[in-house]
Image 1 (cartoon, rainbow, N blue to C red):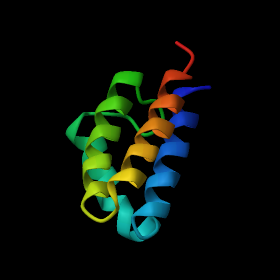
Image 2 (image 1 turned 90 degrees about the vertical axis):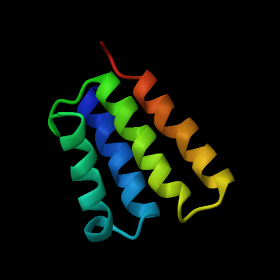
Image 3 (image 1 turned 120 degrees about the horizontal axis):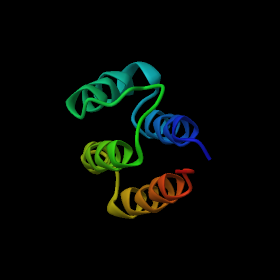
Image 4 (image 1 turned 180 degrees about the vertical axis):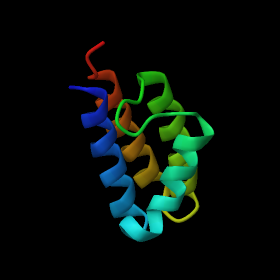
Length: 83
């Protein structure tokens, strides 16, 4: 899997759990900017950092078991990135 494919999966999943694209996109954009990540070519490490922050946001409005499940799914996608 390419980094951009993993990123797309992660971001779609976050959007679905955080009120849709309009509600979630400001949070996503902020995290990409915070870590200097490129939407079209993020690194594995940048995605790990971004996912950790997005999961903190999800933890504010979702049960822990949901956040734990999402962490496993998202980190699996990151691990599958071809280097």
